[in-house]
Image (cartoon, helix red, strand yellow):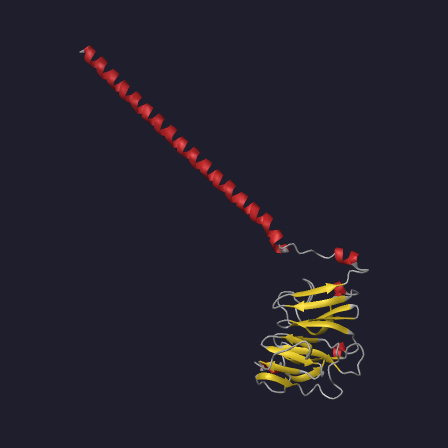
Length: 268
């Protein structure tokens, strides 16, 4: 893609997704190109684009402002647009938005986030995160707790939903990977709440719970082997003692027979 050469003088915003690129140059008109499957390029068709192509939805008054928030994940794209909207504009999305249902072949407003001051956003494989006002909001499909709702919370959410554990915190930035999410928050006035959160030390809670059971199992097996070996040794010893006793009895009987025979010869 030779036309995809971006320089600081021509680019206001640019972000890479999975096999695609979203580019908003200084003229504020959005271009996208790359893999067009699932409508992720917003061109109303699933066609691959080998050079920057204007997204016709974002024209006239509905252009991206200089402080627009843009995001590109594996199967969807998003941005804030519309100079008439305060706080960065209305959030739009296109591509594969929900796990079930049709794809959005062109940008559509995400009405659940209307009126929110969205400062940052990122998308992963099928999860989305954004920081808005004093809340952290996530939605999408997740398998490993990527949405941040906790071990007892829902696994997925079709609509934007607050991450309650971070409610009231000022989210500075967010990042989404293939099977994880990360959030950076301002510690001002919430440092005590952050200190109460669980700390990941490289070992999962399940591993911590299983370790004593494994140790006990190993100890039990060791004791069982030791007891078995002791029993076998005792059994061999008893068998040996019994054999020796039988040999002694045989020797005694032989001696008695010899003595008896000797006495009989003497009597003769």
